[in-house]
Length: 256
Length: 256
Image (cartoon, rainbow over all chains, first blue to last red; front, side, top):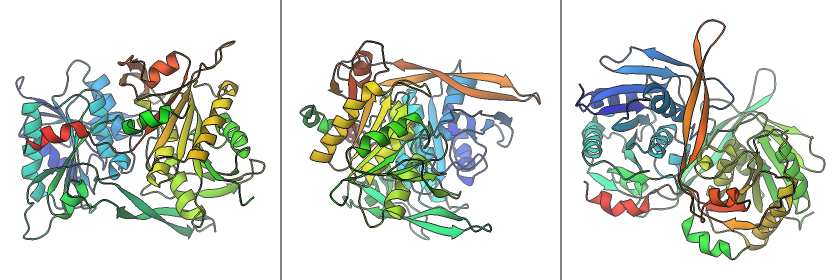
């Protein structure tokens, strides 16, 4: 057991989702697995952390052959708890998050709990990968992704990763009779959401809203993740966490 | 009224906090003000959005001379509701978020609801500024920041901002008899949190945790926001939302 790499797994769809269960199975082939994942869905949680409220953490035996904990906090909380509390004397060789049910390409990376967990791991200096399949279905098909999931994880375990980087891996939705055409390393496409708030009236006569929206891709360049997915490739975007708009620094210095 | 710029205001400490009340007063001197802010504290919410739960939005008259709405959602939700629902026929000339009670320098920008609201506005193509004072106190002193708050907002209103950029402005904590030495345009410092989970036992005998931690600055370079704050300057970091680790793209293409 001692020679096996330690792989920490989390997600944002919750510890019982199909995506994390498949990921656990695949990672058990590559190493010793530890799961720390939210006890409820946390989609759209972004890089939220739990401040001003308490966090619960319970051991759970739902995964055969893998130590698992369910957590009341966010995906980023799960990484922090694993690193600083549960694993204080060991360092994971790899952190994987997902498999997310739904796309995390383009600006979706900012809203994504799955990718925020991977980026939290990168801040901790741990090699990390977030996996997503572009299919929001609770029962999303993911067998077409498994070869690339293992290949990319194996590659990171072998090669390591530059400090402060996490991979954002997206898979196209399954199409009958169509195989994924390959892996494209790409940049995050420029896109946004055109929100359409669905206003309803509750039984007490008081209005409330559902957030709904339409994804608008503004960037069809072949070097983007959106292009890769649209053309049935697996997209791999290396992500950092430096938000500085470096190219504007010089201009801005003339302002003040 | 028609010639006055429209300024949209939000924050993450909630609509009743001292910081947003001060910001509303200052912005009223520069334009027509509209407030859409959370009805409860949302610190550490990052770029979370409300999916799978409903959102409430109520008009509120707590600010004299300013239209205001309190919202049950996150800071990013507030921007989305303002842009796509409340203001569907008008475009704000400026979005300001804060004044946050506590530092949003360095990696804190990722956890910050205040800055995520500003970045959400940048995704919408709106000029945006997040303001924070490095003092977590509920009653944080902010009079020493007001001159720079107005100066920076006025500058953005006059000059505009490159598409997809938001300013992350942090002010040092008030020190008696010491004035802020000036404004430094800088990059986000490399830092992280060393978390210390405070484990306690509830009255039912079940354990729970509080997230606490120590901020570790790993980057003392004079071009960073951490340096600026430590040396009693106002820090201004231009922020984007492209997480792509561009310098690694070429290397990574050789992997697959």
